[in-house]
Length: 444
Image (cartoon, rainbow, N blue to C red):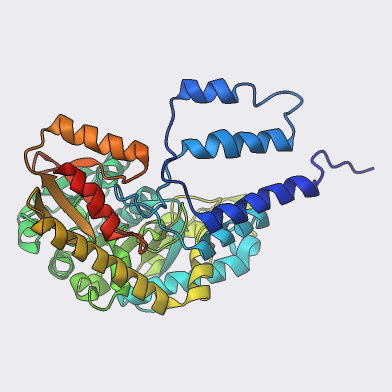
């Protein structure tokens, strides 16, 4: 006789689904935030027991303790880091995706889901102007995407140059921290090229630092700290002349390619060899989703395809996502983006991205004309760097913490050219510039 140790409970499932519907409709509470572990343990201690708490009590811990102790990066006032701003369609569908339990590592397990993901990847490839040979996979985040792309770059370079040396990665001083981490993991040298006054790496500067050991140039398509887009056209021309792979870290800024007015800033990307775009940043998808793309997908498969006797039954004539990054098991994390694109259309995405850029330009103009503020940079895409006049660093930190805790504005300090400054990164089309400036008024 069969026995189900985890029987279905209609009321418990309904309780969860009702909460999901209500939360998506209302949106996140900006007053939520991290709490000390000792305080959380005081309320959650004993949650895991031999006999269990029961579904009602366990879910109450989530709604009353766990979720309120998380930072709501999807809120329009969350302007530090590069926050998420998922559409309600994407959030709703993410719940369905979790329930479906799709294995999307190979075609046999997730054919329909993989085909849909590939449609979303094709849209992104088209933004870059890439040919039909392009393809890739959605991975968990930009760090894994950069690692997988740069491993493919070294594999490609070694196959063409009959070398097994460590090799070197060349990048800007404004490159994301993951590039240095990737170099450490790969045991490769890292060549850092100083950026210009706006945070941009020029081809001339890169050429002066290029070495025979360099197998990849990493170009910023929207640097995290300053929003700069490197000289992609010049860097790709340099790379093609020297037999070097070009990888574009578009994790944040790649979304701007959907806006016709901003697309020229990325000219040259059509000749790059790989790129990443994080839909959970400025393409309105939930965490965790990074689109990793190769201009020639065969180069990704050559570097990452796994072989084992237990994988012999996998159909190699179809698209198997496990072949294109450093992973095997994966969920179909690209489906919420696909669903939102299919629901709203690509025109709505282009308009939302253009509107977000307009918000950043409006804010930069207001900051530039505010007598108590100094605009230092921007907007580079949608990143703005500024400082308050006459404020010491400890005062800036205190101000940021006060407004972080109140939920009024998440605007945290960073550093630019060694100086503490404030940074805004606008990726949410619902951000209200009037509200932001009202909070910045308190810096007077």
